[in-house]
Length: 504
Image (cartoon, rainbow, N blue to C red; front, top):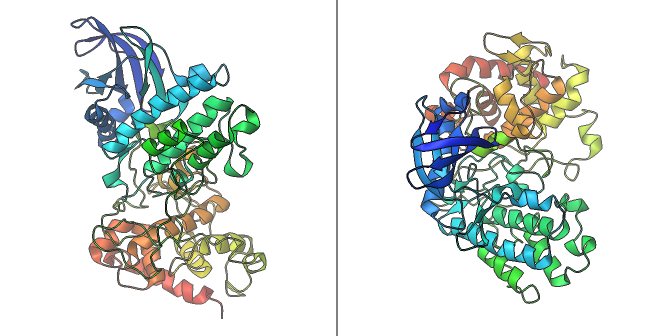
């Protein structure tokens, strides 16, 4: 698609930026004799209503904030070909990323900039918005008419309103800056995720380096000795992997940066509810803290594709009827993945004790089946269930190719859905068939552990509900108040195999 000559009354002059979903152009408002930036949704996404809605939501959030500390939106419209666009402040002095190419900033400059960035993020927090993608390329500079410049926080393409954060939340963010909870499916990041991003920005400006992974990270003073111990403590607390330990919001972090030798006191840890406590109406849509959310990504430094800039809630179901985002106050997150701390290596590999000896489960897949079936402590999930589902799906055929249904491999994944459940999720390239058993089988565990809690309270056998969930998604089970009639034959088949595969 060629660049338009105009977007409404705005005359397009040149392309200044390209993302996964949109392009940004320098344009001129002839009526007001002023340069502006025009962001235009790409043609291939403009016909997808969910992407289009996300694009327009970014404009609305920026307009709602209406602060000089953020990129401001002045107008919105559609091109003649139907592509939506919005008009915003032109950042004529570039980005923080460009400035950091020359190395760390002077201490006073770094802390002065962080003060303005924190104030901009605090505006978002004050209206209930979490940015979720704070990084140097999203900090822009604009000339002031009276001289000097102002700092602007930009790109709310993956921002979320906090009143929606208890709903199904996709992994999002950028490596080095994203908080650990942002690599979790339904990690429900709040203002503390932005505090992590602010801490990462501070660290980068002070040291010239993007923060390493938590286990490899050193305090800023190790890379720049003039950084004080108090400043070390403030920044490292912002970067703490445990969000309960971080500064609670941008305002508090700014106060701590301003007085690093006398920071605010740490937050009082909340008392976790008992494992059996059910959420009351109006409470947070989270499980008790004893059951951690299940990670989709392999590590906090995994790359999130540029598509997240205008993230879309893609179908997570394996059939045409996708699961609905969470809506009930009693829905829950995925249980804790079973790790070497809870299951001994001897128990997991080889697969002795998990699967019936002498069954027709191929030996080469048994360890993978155990990994998937012990991925978490979800009721009904077991290696025998995974084996039974694989038997029902493909008869253990790793080369299965059903082009009519677009399903492939031993677990009959579609490429679009497997994209979410592969290691690193959407942060990795979209998988293309043929799908290996190593990828396909373990992804089943991720899927069932993450979405299984959504159907726990429905009536029916826990294992067979998971089998139906894999075929239909959450919404059909909820509508049927259990296993939908459409999938009864499938779950009956799984039940027969399950009896054959359970240890004697």
